Image (cartoon, rainbow, N blue to C red; front, side, top):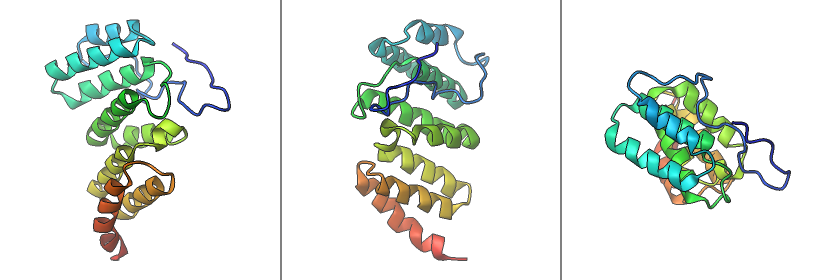
Length: 174
């Protein structure tokens, strides 16, 4: 399902932002039916969100949920705007799950989202990335992510400022 290019005036994602590994097979613990239903619901945001909620109730494996979120993001359709909160929530869930399960995929996903307004608007994306970088021992990178989020106007800025105030003294230490 190729969503095609966007016009220059719209900086919303129109290509696959979900799964970054390139694999299209589901893991043994991910119900194949849910993934197929998500794909069949391409462009029907309401149906996709309903399927995601259903998967969240029945699935506890973070890797499986990362795959569900990835397919959901891929097939969501065009976000209405940077204010499409359902899409933003879906991207944040994907990011948070990847931060726990696959740091390299989380970085790739975040890097691609950051090229679009919808990916820069939500402070939770930067907060998740910073928390992952801190957990992995790179406090300087965490600080850089938080500062970038503030610079691009991610909201709510208070979230980023609070974490930044806590991390900056740590980043100063050798």
